[in-house]
Length: 234
Image 1: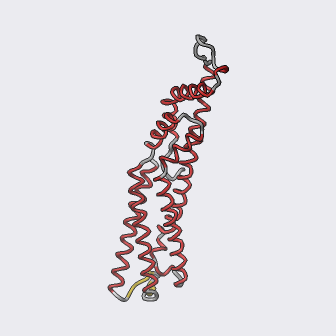
Image 2: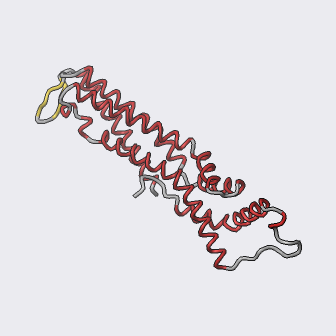
Image 3: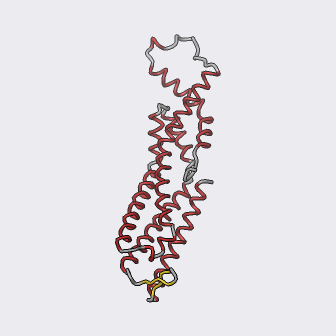
């Protein structure tokens, strides 16, 4: 399953709505580029296409729209997958248990992973921000008339759940910042916890309270992110 919205349904609607106009515009553009001698003689009438020819042209147009959409949306989906994979690592209960870190080097390693997670999230945000011009360029590269490409692009952009994307992005930034705070807590207070029945406990009440607050914040943000992911695939 794709990690977020599917654009296939929207793609079909776009094709049905714009295929006749697109074909007409494409034909006009082709006619304008011909030499006078190559054009039909005056009074000969416009070229008529058989049903089979029309279906073939619509099929080719569908392929062009799909190629453009897949190039842009497929890249976003790939980055979404990378972000969600990194997110799943930090969502595990072990990350909120100091006893699972064997040394300060483990904390440093997870901080490196967190930085990579942050870079993936920043890259994903940029892809969403650039979706409009990227789709426009991809459609033009598929030799679709500029005016029609703009209309198709706008319809495709409507398939993005923008409110969910925006909210998830903000929550991800909070989630990453909260984990960075937790890793700093582990590093700064290394060795202040003991194991009792397999559970890390802090003798210092203030440290214990700070740790519980950090865990609560991370879990609350994670639950909100999980909900946004559910909304993305509806």
